Amino acid sequence: MPHDDAPSEEGPTKLVIRNIGLILSGKLEEPIYDGDCIIAENGKIVAWGAEADLDTEGATTTVDAMGCTVAPGLIDSHIHPVVGDYTPRQQQLHWIDSTLHGGVTTLISAGEVHMPGRPKDIVGLKAMAIAAQRWYDNFRPSGMKVHAGAPVIEHGMVEEDFKDLAEAGVKLLGEVGLGTVKDGKTAKEMVGWARKYGIQSTIHTGGPSIPGSGLIDADMVLETGTDVIGHINGGHTALPDDQITCLCESCTAGLEIVHNGNERAALLTLNTARELGCLDRVILGTDGPAGSGVQPLGIMRMVAMLSSLGNIAAEQAFCFATGNTTRQRELDTGMIEEGLCADFVLMDQAQHAPGKTLLESVQLGNLPGVGMTIIDGKVTSGRSRNTPPAGRIPKVV
Picture (cartoon, helix red, strand yellow):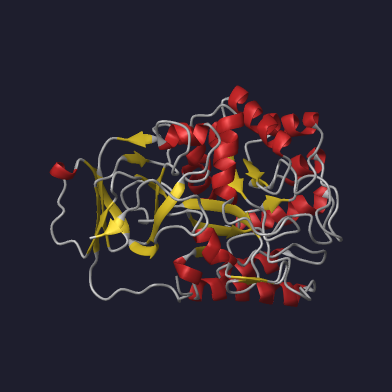
């Protein structure tokens, strides 16, 4: 897929996806919908259900799902972008396009920390955050939605700085703890200023990830009070079990499990959340690009891993990567719901994979094959070059 600016359409559009085998809603409370058809107009979902009951006339694009599963486009809650579709962290081009081929349609920055020479003075860090927000707003690699411009807090910031950032369009803080602010008292004050102006916060959790970062333990996470506990399973090094359990029990923040973390700690978090009755707090990220590289299939792999080893129904595990993140991050995508963005991944059981259905195959730990992605009602990719080949491939009629 070419790396284009944000897609623009002339005139009204209507997307009809018909012949759907299974609709995954993204909603933990009702993960599977009845129906074989979804309708979107001008990039927004308007209806779903049985095709015979829907108005399919006047479609500008019709997709025959060929019996495939349709789910909301997956969301990666934790990435570290830099500029465009390039990361200097691994000297890699087109990593965002590759991620799209893993069924992900939305990326959320936890800080543009791998920018060479990243400014740490107040003027510079604000300028870079605003610029990052702007360049991904103006340029969408392969159509991907990238929520970026996430400044890392540094000593010397005052309330006015957060007001300035918010007024300029910044809506996220980079991981607390990756800058010079490493004490809970100062971090709590700054997170409070951010929240006052509508900026959502995430904290680094666990041992140091790169030189310059440090240990963030449960006490600091709880004192700081961010909206999301970033990589609760470590990025890369996890906290001791009792601290992870304490975090799950002692706050209401999002429990972010990442690919680039400790898998055992991920399962501990999942099991603790289930025991506490708060699976709705579980969200997924990759925490890449990073030292572990880039993982185009990272979110899909997390869904399969948590479903298979964590004994979670696959349709629920997909909610961790869609609707849970939507609700936690206050997004306009990630669920099949009227008025939300028509962002979808169409997938099927991989060829020769064990299991009788896609969901059964995923629960056995296998990746599905991605056959198409759609963003804002526009087809953005076809058969994935990265997943195993799907049994069935949707087509534009």
